[in-house]
Image 1 (cartoon, rainbow, N blue to C red):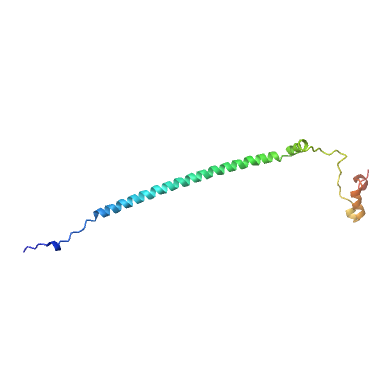
Image 2 (spheres, helix red, strand yellow; image 1 turned 135 degrees about the vertical axis):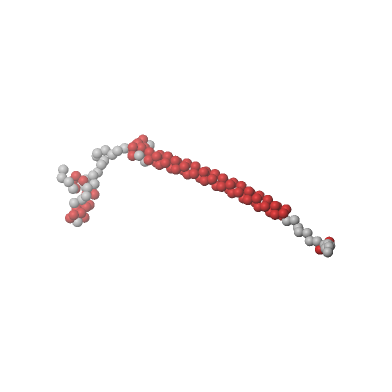
Length: 129
């Protein structure tokens, strides 16, 4: 018994290997693209981090430099020299210095003693010459 297939009975399977290979190639290119993009992104982030670190180092060194300059400007000798030369200040003479002592009137509670310390010289108000 011979059995032959007719044309309408022949069912050919479609060749799907090209679609499979095309899918694999697409996945391969997608993975390569994403890995290259990630490396590029990481290199940009590293460059930004390095730039910020350099900026921070510059700020810290400038801060130290300004602190040194501030200490130099606030030095007592420099302030005294600036007051003497630039502003014309002088140290007071011994006659111009008034010694402020605590009045003994505060112990006694008298207002006259307290006012006497203000209106009379120190030597005559609270101390014995």
